[in-house]
Length: 399
Image (cartoon, rainbow, N blue to C red; front, side, top):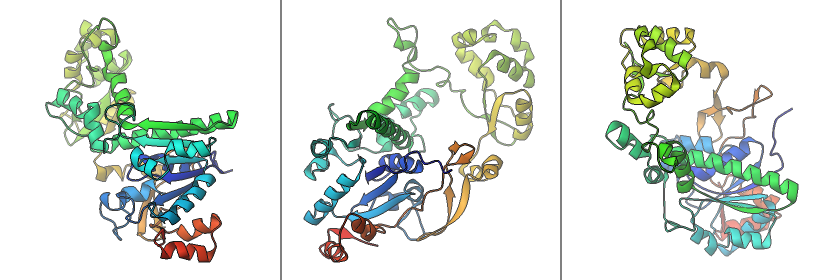
């Protein structure tokens, strides 16, 4: 039996770019029915995400918008307001990441919707919590990265601030929002009550950074400096080998002894600074200098064989190009070819989640802007003539 725990759940997706689409994509992965509303200009990520055969579905857009029907509406049009009212009535969950002020002007804010539909689950993704002085500020992933101190961590470790070259805040907060929505659905099934959720990126990511890096300052009085000193060590880097780099982590006492033996430094096993987890925590700088020493005596393959034989966690350091051809990913079929209705031959990513040993079902390909406008409007009760009238007046658009 196909595992679709959210089958029958209806999601109205008023999101764009990455953080919101990541949340609704995850809900769709679990079988929810998702209708994505785009404005006439379309989701910025259609082009911002890079090159594509048509210029309309960049790779990131392609992957984050699978399994969604697409309707194109001009939300400033009176005709579109009636369509939105029907869509809101249809939905179990409304997810938005527009600015709160813009949503309020359109009557699509949580207070307005839940005053009429208290049973709805309304989820607003914001850059910053609406109660604080940053509420309403515009933001993007890299701005949030800076605000929560991610470049500050590389400044402390490497001497220069760097962004993580991945939209990590968008993806993480999108996943957290999907989890919050599923919890709200469970609560509604138990109590019948809806809820208005707000998931601010800044506070959410700041929490994750501080969980690790408030560290010894978590206590009163503090027992040490800010920051996990292991992660901030300049020696906490991939290890250079004869022909590349590998990633190695050793934490337990048996792993440390095996690592020192494998790297011909067995004499350090008796060193009291490195003899236990507690000792290495005190002498973290010296320990990371030991474990961060380059391993240029052997190739990456030779080191990986040695470490795996010793049950040490170690993997090659991939580039984007080599990751695609990783033998494990190829064996489990994470990437699969697909003929897309507008973009031609594409590579799709199957779900990484297994239910009873099988991946979650692959959802339908991402849709062109307005590809499902006529179908969605018909499902909402509009006649063919009424659909055409909405198209003619510019309230809706269709591919």
